[in-house]
Structures are given as C-alpha cells and as structure tokens.
Amino acid sequence: MKLSQWLKRPPSVQQGDDAASASNQAVSASNQESSPSDKWRFEMMKDYLHGHTSKEAAGWFESAGYTAADFYDYFPCFLGAGSIGRYLSLYECYKQTLGVAGHIAEVGVYRGAVSLLFTKLVLLYEPYSTTQVHGFDMYERAVPSTRGKGFSFVETYQRVKNLIDIQGLQANCLLHDVNAIDELPGFFEQAPHLQFKLVFLDAGDYDIVSSCLREFWPRLTTGGIIIFDQFNHEAAPGETRAVKEFLPPGTAIRTFPNGWMPNAYVVKT
Ligand SMILES: C[S@@+](CC[C@H](N)C(=O)[O-])C[C@H]1O[C@@H](n2cnc3c(N)ncnc32)[C@H](O)[C@@H]1O
Figure (tube, rainbow, N blue to C red):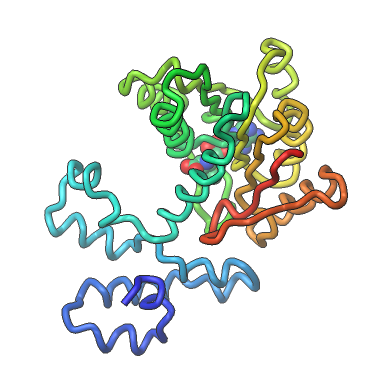
C-alpha cells in the first residue's frame, strides 16, 4: 500500500492491520497527535496527511542505529512524502526556468536547504553557466517567528556560511544578511545589475511578501518564476493579500500536483 493511502486510512485501521509494525503504529499515533484540526479550520487540517517524518519515527531511526552516513546516502528511507514533494515542486520550477537568463533567489534561507538544493541543481544542469544562488535572510536579527505549525526558525549566518564553504560552494551560493522588509532597495542599489529567473519567497507574511514583490518582480526576467510558500493558506493569510494586491488582475497563479509548501507560483509573461 502506498504511504499516502496508508496515512489516509482511519486511525483505528491504521493501528490494527499492519502486522509488522510497531513503527507503523508509532507513525499513526503521531499523525493523530499532530493533527492540528483543533486549532486550524482550513488548509492546515490536511497538512498532517501528507506524511512528514514523525517525532516517533525519528526517535526510532536513532534507536535503530542508523548513522548520519545512512541519512546522506539513503535519505528517501527517512523523509516523509510531504518533504520529498516540497523539493520536487521546487525542482519542477527550477527546470522550467532552464534557458531563462538570471540568477536564483531565496528569501528566508534558515538552514540553507533550499538555497543549497538550487545550488546543486545549477551544478548538475548548468555547470558552465554564471548562474548563482542568492540567499537573503536577516538571521540573528530576526525575531523568532511562530508561523504555521508553531515552529520557531532560529539559525546563525555563520553556520550556514560555513555549510556552504565546507562544500566549496562559496562562488555558487551567496548569503546576504538583509531584512527583506526594508533593506532590499539598499542592497539592490549596490548591485543594480542583478536579474533573476527564479525567486522563492519563504520568510513571512504580508510585509515581507509585499516588499519582495516590489523589489524582485521588476528584476525577474520574462519567463522567470516567483514561488510562494503559503499562498491561499491559513498559516499566512497576509501572503495571499500581498499577492492579490500586487499582481495585475488576470495573472495566472499556478499550483503543484503534490502541493504542500510551496503551494503556488507565477510565471512572468
Ligand atoms: C520558514 S524559514 C525559511 C525556511 C527555508 N526557506 C527552508 O525551506 O528551509 C523563515 C526564515 O525567514 C527569515 N526571516 C524572517 N523575517 C525576515 C526578514 N524580515 N527578512 C529576511 N529574512 C527573514 C528567518 O530568519 C528564517 O530563517
């Protein structure tokens, strides 16, 4: 049975019929616990169905003796389907922009997963291009936010910079300590030539999305794509408002077949 089908079965069935499966029962229990239906009324109610690695599963991975090397080499064993879908959605957008001139930006880098994903896609798909990935985050200056599921995103600039450098990617992935609400105009004054083919917005709600659309849209090449992490999502209602205010009426806002987060993108025409 597919993971998605298994997760959609009623909890009683999930617990009962899978012989082997202490670990499956742990996953099932955790999916019930993490169901946010008591707090959320709309999109978040479905969020847990997508299959993220549960705390119980993660605990079992550790107790079963898997090593860090196992995670590097066999990561699909451990990632939930939702997490894999996130990276596939981003990959699909990246692929659509091959051949479009411009760099790639991520606003809201956190640990660097998406900036480094894009960096490695550039290495694989356009190794001789000058395409660079620009990651924007205000790191230690950011007030820890409690968006979405109540996670708080705290990371240091230096740790992400070291992660990039240790892999020899310092010319491919550039990290900018910038407050996306009011420091982007100053940043672009210093680098007025910068043009983008792909921009991923994942830093916050109304103020950040409005400011990023103002600054990145004119710098997005025709054929380029801007990706929204939580459009039409109750976790960030201001994101929808900012997008609707900024984009001309009639702009096509598309989504992903495996759409969790990110869940929308616009191709500039
Ligand atoms: C949800 S996390 C980003 C997750 C990341 N995109 C990923 O996929 O792993 C949000 C990030 O936005 C950053 N952030 C919050 N407010 C910001 C602002 N005004 N300007 C720039 N970055 C900001 C936080 O420091 C945090 O690292």
